[in-house]
Amino acid sequence: MSGQESSGGELATALSNRRLTYWFLSRICEKEIKDDFLKELISRNNPILKISDSLDIPDEEIKEGLNIMKKYVENAIGRDLKEVELELAVDYANIFLGVKKKPPHPSESVYKTGLLMQEPYDEVLNAYWDAGVNVVKEFKEPADHVAIELQFMSYLCRKAQEALEKNDKENLLKYLRMQKDFMEKHLIQWIPQLARDIQESADTDFYKGLGKILGQYIQHDKEAIELLIEEAESL
Image (cartoon, rainbow, N blue to C red; front, side):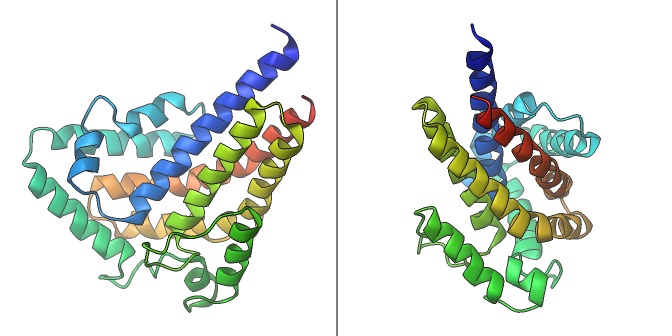
């Protein structure tokens, strides 16, 4: 195998792992953990285990967050799942639906300006449109909600993966640079603070673990994107 093929394989793995991680974080922030997803979490296909196995990040806080979430899920196996579902739903409502009034609404505009749907909202909509993405109307939250911003990064990872599979270096770099731009202008500017607020407000270890992972992962991925662009440029 040539050095270029090896580099391409490592890049493909990194993009796949990042796509899965962003999808998982988005899903947890998007809505309550309902029956089907809860069953998936306690199954052998548990996405927490997949992410834990795939992430090669020497960050103790991320590892601790994943372990906390895994232990919560393992302990849920012997419990009434309806009870677990209700426990998680209450915590989700406290954190993401403003029941406790802190954290604030989990959208970029609120974290930056204190108000909903301000300039960051318009900016992220433009970023979505530039990438050919339409926000799903069924999701009632603003376009700069944390779940949508994380899902957008997962989408950009998938588009970069597809370009790499087609040996389309131009579009590979295009989607990696979109990720870099979105990270620097949006995610890194407010999600670490949201993550700290989640840790402080969460009652369950499941969401405490999420808070530990979310902020650290965003900060790690900011550096990772730079390295991925360098790798892609050398292909």
